[in-house]
Image (cartoon, rainbow, N blue to C red; front, side, top):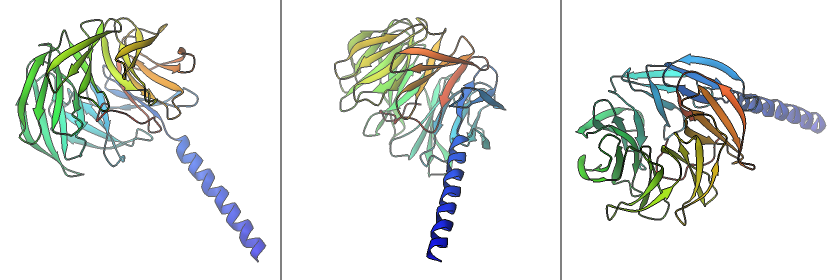
Length: 331
């Protein structure tokens, strides 16, 4: 009987292990085709498209919920948030009436949910109780509020204003504009440098990244990268953050300890935009906004090793088994 019991337990263990492997095998790379109102799903191992799911109009950015049970996709023109399974991309439900959610983010303490309404020139702040979103304040903020991130203490939300070339800060406790400052032409992505008061701002209208000391409200340095510096992804190595240069068709690696450019990844397709990094840090996935493709970069060699055709204007990208994101809350 003890022998049979061990055999039974071993068999059941194998079965459960296989079930677990099968469940993990369903994980998909989730890509937002912003000009085609759809989500493209890609097998992360075979790099084959496995499905296409309708979304709202102009799905640009996405954000995992604090409990990791849902991935929120912001349908900016449809004025809605689409909730999908973060593993499979399958639709869970839709929240209507969220006006023009272009960019979206949760505060570090998860008490606030913030959207940048790019077309409406405002930032909307919602109370979040872990399930419900209740509007707290709509803050007019011209011109063209774009990307969001937070101060490490969670007191401020930073917003880039692409039209006016400024960086703004909003006090979350009072839901009021704290300050705004000029940073350069068409600022976009914001990355918070760990253990400092510095922000990195992708200057899409220039060929550099602006370093802003937000406590002093000063641009203290500019790091030459490439034309159309746009968005960031930390590389989880304690040293580097990647920035996509959307016009130069390159990705620059910035040493955020020294605030210098370390190297460039070249030979890419047109319009590199958002990025996601595999959990083992070996592969960087990139959406090519102008090429209708997603690419996979081998970070050991710095070479583009594969491209996958998707829909028009691919923008946001996500997969569950990813390397940690270092910075309070980029997408």
